[in-house]
Amino acid sequence: MPLPFGFKLKRTRRYTVSSKSCLVTRIQLLNGEFVEFTLSVESTGQECLEAVAQRLELREITYFSLWYFNKQNQQRWVDLEKVLKKQLDKHGQEPTVYFGVLFYIPSVNQLQQEITRYQYYLQLKKDVLEGKISCSLDQAIRLASLAVQADFGDFNRYDSQDFLQKFALFPIDWIQDERVLEEATQKVALRYQSLRGLPASDAEMLYMQEVEKMEGYGQESYQAKDSTGTDATLGSCLDGIVVKYKNGRPPLLFRWDEINNMTHNRSFFALELTNREESVQYQTEDMETSKYVCRMCLARLKFYKINKSNNLYMNTQNGFYYHSQTSLDRFPMEYGSGGRLRNGSVYSAHSTSSLTNPQHYLQPSPMSSNPSITSDITRPDFVPSHRHSVH
Image (cartoon, rainbow, N blue to C red; front, side, top):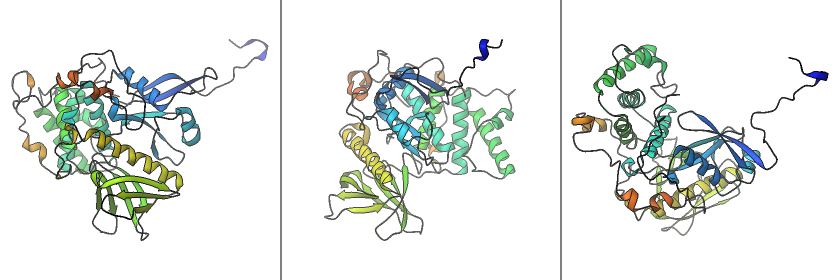
């Protein structure tokens, strides 16, 4: 029905605020779902993160944060201490914010809450499919079969392997040859059949235990030049700050224990080391980038120092990375009654430490002075009913 007097409704953007004091924030979760929150225009990134955690029933918030695409289409983590709207208005390409894992840990066995493990699994699967983690063809097949078991449950012979071709099993643009792709998909289907009876949570854990040993796990990289002007990739990893060269020079690793401080000046990012009088400098793209790299690396240094005194970093003398091509093969795929792994539970879903050590959940985020969210959910293994919805 036409509106009277030629009156026309003005089309508005989806994310316009309902009032000057409110902001509707759209956030994409790790399962692909979009959720919206109505926040104050003065809300910080931390307050937005806490709203997401409350929606997910997530108590171990320490490992997670929010990110956005900047105007150069680069991923940038939100500064949790600052007003979210100002950051998006100044730097954001779009109003959408993304939820994800910021602080990776040496062993996924340390994750105590079931929903934490599920979110962590979704992040690692995303990292693998986006090509951020290097893997061989055999590893990719093993990971894909575990992901299918985790996401879809037991193999149904009536499904055959046809349905597998509709889903992303391997890293983007990784397999160009159609014949190789078909053979790899057939191998995934066969391995998937062999996983019948494996609970989704165990499939996810085996997936994560494989990925945590692979190159690229937990790394975030930035382009830079060293003091000689040589192109390098500057990255933070679980061990410290790693510098990789394209010209064949061996990589450098500055361990967290060797780093006193990190600073930025104009486009330069500097490491102050315990065993050197002079700092080690790297030049980034511009002043904004050096400031960002410094903030993120300092956050990871702080996270390391906070967690160094507990069990999170107890087995790190030889580094975190064990580049095994067959590490999953060392886990016998044998199950006892109820589908549990015969060598005992891979993790303790009802870990007593999660109940007797509340600071594990409530410790402040290394990027914020505000305490993390507290939840009235008392069971550490509580999982929402839509846990394995596939998007």
